[in-house]
Length: 311
Image (tube, rainbow, N blue to C red; front, side, top):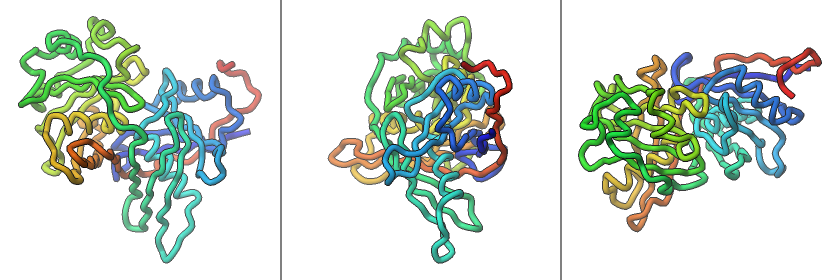
């Protein structure tokens, strides 16, 4: 027996850029241990397993795994899985193949709008299932600098200071002075676990206003070694939480505000995440994440009776 296996590059309109994603479909018979073993074998930031939905009105149920553990929600798997489902299932109407893909996840059902055009890369967008909330107390500037191999004076800019927020997954948000410091940042193994314990932080998200591209509002990097992800090329779930940072520090007026976040440049996998914040009555009302994805590999993964390391 073999299961269909697809890979996509997400948050990019070009192959071999963006954040690579593996999607295993028809995965209903796989156990949790088998899913984790496959994700570990593929060794991408995340692997998605697509199953029949519990609600027949929804498109599919998905489970998301890093090489180290399962996640309740993640952005680039949501975008990539929705685009793949639309490509495999959406009918063509008047030459167009737009679709609403409803994906059941641990965090809840996420509805994703997918736009398919013959002469454009597929694009998908979804409203975050949870709004960001303050979580842990951030470590001191000195300790953060030690964990990132930076100087304390390179942490923070304008009125931006380190914050911790969660929206399904938790992140520490670290403002950095500019691109030169961003390029030098690293996860220092001697300090990392004591400064950013995995029980409190799913990842550490660095950001600066200095960007490579004129159309970007922020340049970002994200480290999550406790999840088996030394660095992530594009992190949609962190972008959801980052909306809270932008709202708190940048004083946005009521209305819709779009910000493009560039990420992955230091890894040679440039990515672009479209973040939309809707503010009403001074409060963050909606967070929307959008991006393109391109198919790279269509194949299969063997699940026959030969010996494996899974249980």
